[in-house]
Length: 175
Image (tube, rainbow, N blue to C red; front, side, top):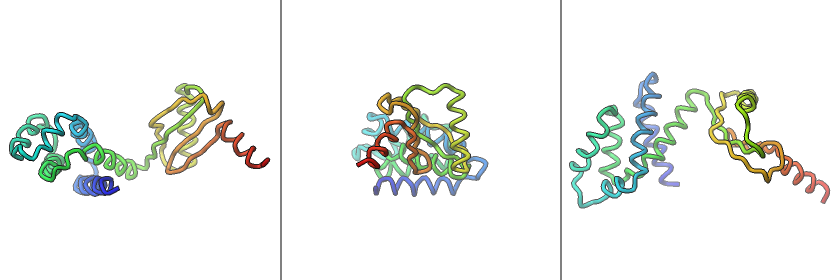
């Protein structure tokens, strides 16, 4: 939890330093540098205390030449504190802040069979009506065990409209 809290604070700082018209640009930049935080070799090099911070910075400087000063300074700060592995978490938290700012909710959907594009669009619109925000279906899982229907996780809530879920509820009522 401490790591997530720190990631949230770093993301909040970048968000507050960004002009509102550039928040999407910062998001793209953070996602780019977050890919660095997923490369085990780069993390091992950057977290190695025997390597001078200047050498670490010069290595990244060439690869991140098109990244703005705000994001570069964040990366340098994380390097100096030995926390560069937090970059993916910071990017995730920043995306959450941008979504909140733009009135977007992300949903995870589980169905018994894959949805077609029309069904996906209709579901997104229905969920938008329910939440009052634009809903983007971020992940779609297929699980034949739910028999039929749909399970949705959106806005911190679980909506179970599956046949399996309804059968469980019926069983509880009968017992």
